[in-house]
Image (tube, rainbow, N blue to C red; front, side, top):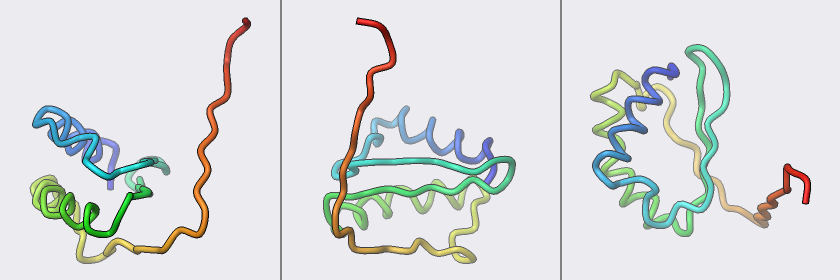
Length: 89
């Protein structure tokens, strides 16, 4: 997807108070140009699927072909998140 497509969907989700979604624990968008990709970590498959019902129509409205690259769902063995400080104390 393109930066423009990603931002359009993100803004729509935020403006309708659907982001951050219930159950999403981490979200990262990476890539450049027209090859952006998204990876997320969810509390449960059920919460992911509930959000998918909201998200998929928005993706289609913005010309993002989800059928050609369906999401890959993987079970997480371990998840750690770290914050680093970036200033002087």
